Image (cartoon, rainbow, N blue to C red; front, top):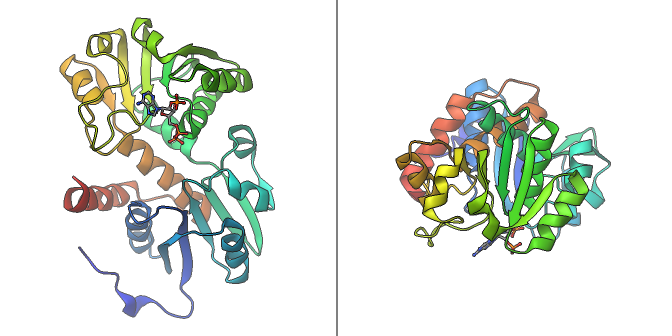
Length: 280
Ligand code: ATR
């Protein structure tokens, strides 16, 4: 692994980071540091395991930390301490990106943008029938994005009430998870943790139901190819891996902070290098 070249750090170097807990597994530092280096921006990005979110945001202002990514469990809790939020944060109820502009903290959400961008490479979302498995925070961000782009969304969740809450808030349909196998749609997105390491032999829908969907996306990226994606490929379906969403949400963060076009190829290379070295 390349070590950070600390000889390049000066008293002018800007600081960015990720807050949340746990953060030591985060792939954001490798992506953002590679991007800063490629564009020639004098900045570093670190991971901060966060004990107290209010104090972290006070420190952001006090130390003029330029930007934070926010991860579990702080995406909802940070909102109370921000000076301004955009419509996406207000509707989704979660913030994954904070920008410090002269001491004012502005919150946005790039998770939905990352998901939409990953899907758009394979399909036109307008009028597309989509089935979303899961009704947690990730599902909420993705459903927001899908509906904003004109998709027709059905959320299927083990706990029906959670799906119904999102459906009521956003105006779409909710069904029990067990119904998913009987639905047909252009797009299926798994936002549950089913199939995530170490439970790599699990799938959120039965194997035979894969045939009911044209494109299958899994936001789980550990393993890189979940059983759901493997079976989808075997059935000749188009697939979208969780790594695409991860990469795209980071690229949008980078652009939001710096105003520069994110070097997606560089970020992707750094991401895969780390995954192949440490995570695969
Ligand atoms: P995130 O913020 O990543 O979306 P979350 O809020 O913990 O995470 O949501 C996890 C999702 O995975 C939920 O939809 C959860 O279903 P419940 O609402 O019924 O808990 C779903 N999930 C987790 N384990 C599951 C399992 N073994 N089978 C089916 N769904 C599961």
